[in-house]
Image 1 (cartoon, one colour):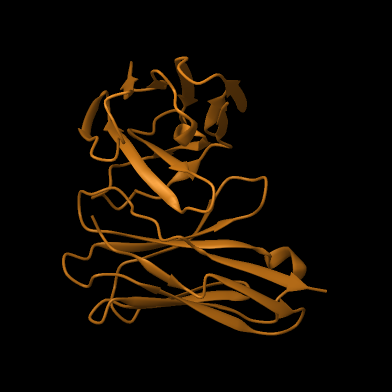
Image 2 (cartoon, rainbow over the protein chains, first blue to last red):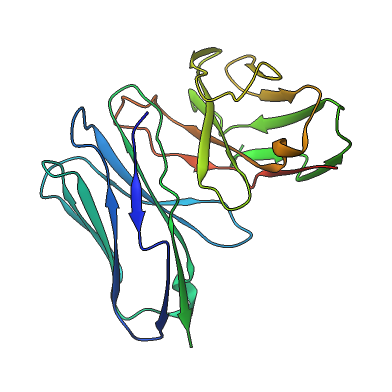
Length: 111
Length: 117
């Protein structure tokens, strides 16, 4: 079972601030790294799937980078808005194993 | 269907009773997964199906938990003799391809919240 660490556990930022958080995972047997956003009272939704070392993906104000050699990924949010408030989950998988989720980073954006 | 459907959305039961949770995945999705989130914990993997077979059931916490999938579609998670520690949100997800494919993005259902008194 993969050991996935996410930090910080929770984060409070002011509207308009930019922020970032980290996902660490074992670098051996890496296949892909997923990011999901889980808003309260909703289902988790996929943000990014990343496979290549050095990959960078962007969706609006949210972007992510991947370092497979050292086993980490960063998620960045530029100009945070209240609607960005959610728990952000990362999940690596190694080939034929199901996604193993970290405990997530809970982001609260204060207006 | 258009999305992943789960039922019931809420279930309150007494300790010792059996419960069944149902998941209806997106039509055509070959892989189906069960996860759960207990209070204060992350998403915990339980079992996944590729078609009707379960290549990985390593996450089932005890032999009180079982799951099946029929017709490559609907899945049922059964918990026998429920205990208070079984209280959690049980999430089902499906994906077009299996974990090792390039089509393994998960679409989640809304979850079934189980409370064992």
